[in-house]
Length: 114
Image 1: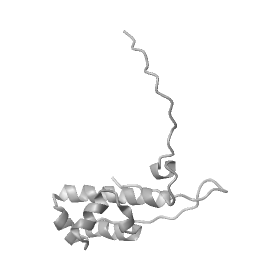
Image 2: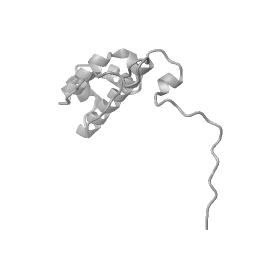
Image 3: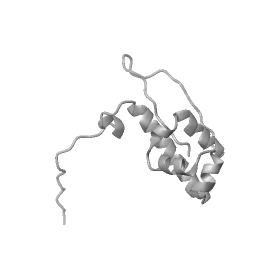
C-alpha cells in the first residue's frame, strides 16, 4: 500500500549558518566558535572529565567554561578556542585557498577530520 507524502508547511531553506539566518553580525565567526565549542564539549565528554578538571586543563575558570559550553561565545576568541583544543592533544590546521566564485567574499568553514 502506498502512503501519501506529507506536505511540509511553508518554510524557508536556511543558509547553513543559523547566525546569518538570524541576521547577527559576525555570523561566520559565531558559526566557527559554535563548531569549536561542540568539539571541546565532545572531547570533555569522551575523557569523562568534570568541568572543574576540564577548566584546569584549558586554564579557564569553571564558571566561565560552563558559560562557554552553554553558548556564551563572547567570552573567548577563536584563537583561544583553538588553544583549548590543542590542550586536548588536537591539531588545529588553518588552510587558505582562493575562493571559487570570483567577485564574492571568501568564507570560513570548519571541517573535522575523521
